[in-house]
Length: 137
Image (cartoon, one colour):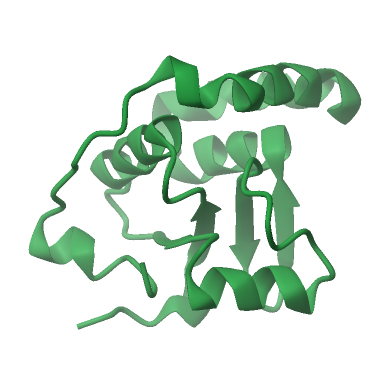
C-alpha cells in the first residue's frame, strides 16, 4: 500500500541511473523517521511534477526534492536539504550552504554529466515497506 505522499518529502530521480538509484537506496536506509518518498522523473507522477512547473521533461540529470505545498529544490540544494532532514551526523553537510549555489552546482553538474560512467545499473530490491515509499515507479 502506497503511503500518503502529500505529507512527505518527495525525491525525484532518474530511474535509469545507477548513481541515482544508489543514492535512493542510501536515503531509504537512513530514513528512520519515514520522511521521504520517491518517484522517478520518467514516471507519470514525475512527468506531471516537471510539466506543472515548466521544467524539462525529457532530460533527467537533475535531482529534485519537493515538499508539497511548500517548496521544491534542485541539484546541490536538494542534496543538502535531504541531508539536513535525515538529521544526525548528516546535518554537518549543511556547511555546504555557505557556498553560492552556482559554485556547489558546478560539482553537482560534474557528477551528473559522468553519472552513467560512475556506477553500473544495479537491481536493487527494496523491502515491502520501502516499496511503499515509491510513487508510480
